[in-house]
Image (tube, rainbow, N blue to C red):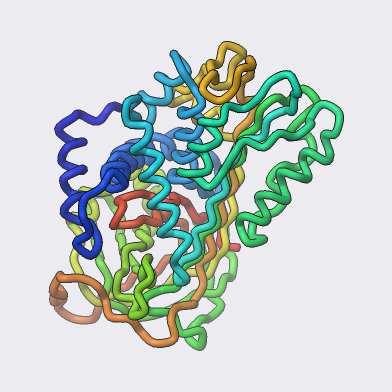
Length: 414
């Protein structure tokens, strides 16, 4: 799906209006707007290609988007055009994308309240007769704090795999280990992409650990497990949709940027919970169809009794199949044109992604005020109950850049 130019212009204007601290509008802001357009379309398309996976699921649209953008910068010809079509990339706007990702990743690195560790890198079979172009390496370092690393799959396979795994572990603060298990690469491997994201945030209003109790979670109508269930009452964005058979809430994390008060709350978790007896697949179809903006626009700010299981979810994906379904095929064939990266004939053998999301009671020591201009909606009687004691879908979003960091499904909390 290619976004019309009118939609692109509207989002760019929104980025201008949303510039933090009345900063002057710059090329980085244009890049941020382009990344927004790309992410909003790509997120739901990517989720649609993988949501048939059974059980719990988690992936990072933003991390995948960044990786594919890196591959796009390495490419020319049909290989590049396929990625441009899938991600709404603009060939003449390469520098804007580089600056946009540079700005976005800098914001993530500079916050102490939300941990967003993203590790993207290409690992290339070493060959003394060929080289990686300096212009491409410069673009990787500037926009993504990354580079192409040469390793020797052909004669030192175990060492090459260890180098890759250790780099991912180091760049995710030890949270993601053994990304490449034995057998994932071979002596014939030429080029591998690794793509990892670890997320953990501090809630604007934490759960009280004393209120956490062991309670049943209904994996299926006939299967129940006991999990630590967290509880709190909070003013949140809330929706109750009988027509589609779900409830939804948005809980905010503490501020994304360097704000000591924690009031600049731009990162949040949207949770969609089907009614008891309703299918999670129906809710996910709604998300995959690109209806998140419509859903959020219909939510109201009110007090809700929230029950949510504590969980840590890990997901590993080989992204080739998903990207093939989105029309990105030549990148993984011998006819791949990666001439913007190297003067040798090479194609991408594999793209491995691991995403880890951790959800606990933790928040800041003192409750931060809710950053919203919306007045609470009075609800007659007791506050509504939002009890996630059955499978649910969640989306972690950043409302300044308007990007989806993570989309996941919890079927059985760990």
